[in-house]
Length: 391
Image 1 (cartoon, rainbow, N blue to C red):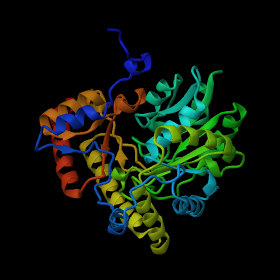
Image 2: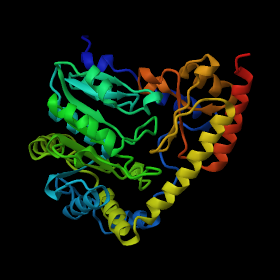
Image 3: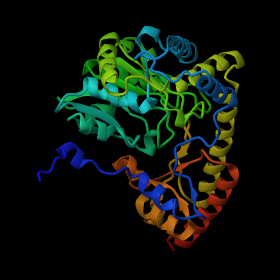
């Protein structure tokens, strides 16, 4: 019988994150700091809205774009919280922000097109580019440059085939953010090379010490930027699978067609919950978001101090809920460190190489878990580092 797999599917590598989670499931005493998922339960008023929707029988398809009330709230949310021009008629409610990434790339990436991706960054971008037949083009980002895309690094990565730039700030795995001034230095280069920007802003609410800035707010950039957002991180709604896209009109129409043939619509119950999240947020000043962000900030500072005391250099994250320490002083790669730490101390982190070549000597550590677990994990990590420090 013939091999029915496509070359693209055959060439896909398994997620560099899942390997460690599978092992942890077999280790009852292990502490996992690898999951990029809030440990908070979805706020009650949001869960209650989902329960009421189920009780009332709102279990059918919605329109392809999503419920009109939800799209209007998303429009208001983007415009008031982040100053992004976001007409409700150009919003698509998606099955998580992950579907938004897929829609944006499938609508714009032809075979052979180059897609510029910061390295390190979220694990799914390059595989989706590959499935579209495109070529992922890494933009090297280092701790010395704050793990942001610099003008020089962007220019160096661009080729005649480059068509799309993915910006993913606040960044997973580094926690880096880009300021308005930094984005303003990229905009002329983007325009000069006529690039489309896909701006993944799923962590927009989780910034510390400053406001999130979207590149779509800069002069001349809205018409060439697809903005991706969602409810998973800020509202602790990962399992509800609800996100959204806001794209220029022509791209939006193409993305909607793909959405119609693949997902059809986001789950109705999740859309009702998302309506409650935004409506309640406007009423309360997004109090639940502020509470979670404050808690994350405390954990962030705790882990930064813990890694500093352990002697591992650690870039200070300004967003998301990850720290990205270097393990190079121990003479190990991130993968070696993660494997041995899990085996010897039962603490699971993710090797930085899972997020790109520039993460080879780093590990990603999520602080989206409780202080008790973080405290014990920090103790075990310090013990491991002490045992393995070069004499």
